[in-house]
Image (cartoon, rainbow, N blue to C red):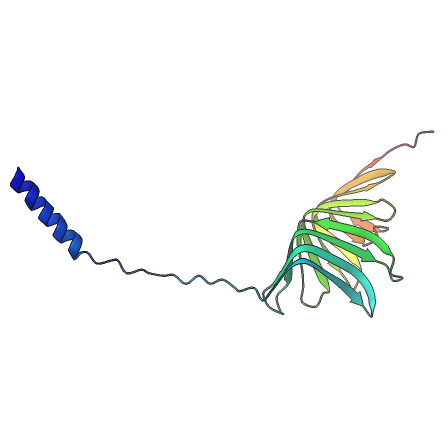
Length: 177
């Protein structure tokens, strides 16, 4: 038995010494580097020198000048009319804006509140600076002091004074005398 254990130990020792470390195969991970990254980010979108919107977010990332900039960690957008007055405020979880600043998309628990207390709720929307319109394809709820409308798909002015809904469901409340 002793001879067997001695022989087994020698074989094991030779086997361990003869083993070379395995060559590491490294896989290249193609990760696009972030060109710009900022925290507590804020920008003002203008049109012919007049403020159209002010965008704030917890963080901002842009890969390249040609790619949309992405912002995270809570988004707040203040929309202005042509006189520079605040007409509505938007909040969302995250968003992105194209390189020219003409088109902005926001996602996650999107709420727009107008100056007259009209409120729009949806999962995502897009703002077009040139037309000063917000639009979306998903479920939307628009609440006013006199009632609520729900639908799927919408197109509205950023002050929420005009809107179009598809597949509408309206509920009106009677005013108490």
